[in-house]
Image (cartoon, rainbow, N blue to C red; front, side, top):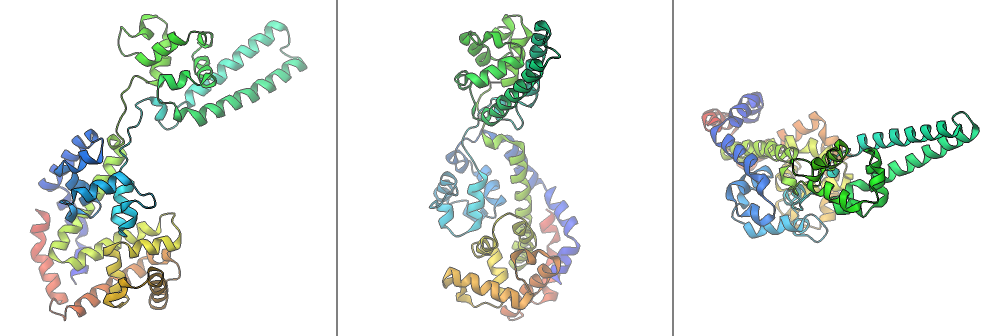
Length: 388
């Protein structure tokens, strides 16, 4: 009954919780300050940022384990890293989400950079070709047709090479050291005749075109201004943590996890049920192999508990060989719930049946001292606490 009540009032409860003063204060602080973090040490030394971060991954109880969290963040998710050895998917998710390696501020790091530049390059090369053929009288000859075919092939080759390599170009010096890329860039702006003026081009690219004293503007030629502005090499490196998509994803997870934690303060069993209801479809939807998804369940405390109780597995189940755990889990899921592949669990009926079984088993194990009517009553009495 407590679960049914929570499900029926979920939207209202979530809305009230998300709009609470404490939650909004944490969200605003995180948005305003996370972009200043450039290392794992910076993050663990800012308790308020660390609190939001850990809560987003269900690790809020590790707020005082600064050394552990710093190592997890610094070592990442490679084989042998601390996160990979902890056998807890929450640490792996935390380590995988954060990247403290500064990204170049240059526009070359943006998705689809160069698309307009390559279009301008193609148009200019073709226009020069047509002008040359007209001047030589070969516009409509077989020679002219052969030239067009060859030029088209050259454009394709140069454009593909540019698109594949430009992401590795982070500074003006990088570009100057790649003559083939530099020629495409200069041609796109009608500056191909400046290829033999490397110092001029380097200075234009390094200074940018924001100030009246920048060389690109002093030269009084809009082509240099467009070149400098397009590449943006004068921009300072940025932290990946400044990315708005990253921030929004962390804050979304924070609100979800904090709400579930608030429910857990009332009844931990309902918190695990909520987490299971949300996490299983997400896990089923990723591209991992079937066994990897099962192993992730075994490595995530909250998910493991729901599986173990709904399947009636013994208390010492987690102590047996991991491969044997996997075999047992898959066998029991197929016999009890008809699940042959992990993704079968994501069907609503299976999730609901597992949650109901888990809740009933939890009550039985508690000797019915916290019966279903009392669960519902406790949830009803606790609404103001969740909404505050």
